[in-house]
Image (cartoon, rainbow, N blue to C red; front, side, top):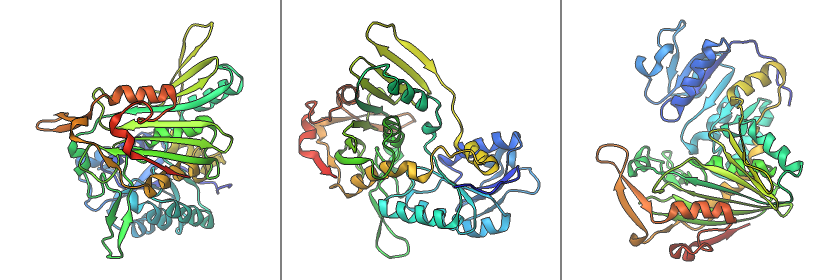
Length: 401
């Protein structure tokens, strides 16, 4: 799609400025200082105070605030909206902006179900606006670099891709919002339950899934032939906090992701590309790549990254290709759908985990025994927890295709 040229600086409205939205607020401040954007408005249920607005507090005209995104877009004449709100609101808010001709940076996951994703994609296409999905790791220059190395045969015949994410979250993390750690939630309008799907694979470590798929080149909705999930929870939540997914692509490639929020020693998530003559490890939050192959010493490189909002601005100004359009997240949304439709995550027995002190005063976090090693072993072997011998994993095997 060729978007119309937009004169800079571009007025932007940020929907959801607290939590992860604070990162977007800081990024907007950086781009405002560079003369590329103006913060025209903030959509929040409770307005930001001067301290939260920081350097934007004294700007003229002042930052407009309100809890109605459509009204805020109309009042400010914003050309771009950043949607960083609870997962169940993504589709409707994206369409609210699209109907007004406002271009989008939509946070991941783009929708809580495949049906909602399709509705969003149709609406955006019909409106003719540009839409970027907020998988920041896909802006890393390491992604095309690694794909080039594999294409050139540097590690021989590809054998598969395994991702590992071992993070830790306090129990309070799952109480941060009414939708946190939920698979579904009652609709305030009284129309019945709505999907949330706030699990480890679909939200906190969604980048592990999307990055692994991107390195394989299997990003489209029709690029996956089979999906198998192992979903578990140590915390007292609905959603999964310790999970594994095995993907078979249309071309027969194997992609796996093992992820947990119950690590004993949390570390940087990574993706391993396996070949019959070597391997490439990518720590995607650090843009760091390690190549190991037979007959050669290890080679480590660090790569640049294109900010996704800047890429969207470049697309509007000069037609630069979007890095993460909705079509590039179709395979990821198939994984979301498989998690959504799977039976509820299997609760781990009390003997499988321990409660340890968390990060803050009085905080508590749950740690699954041996999970750090299992996550790493999964990425190395492209196998799941049950196959690796975790006794607690054997009843929880579920399949979707």
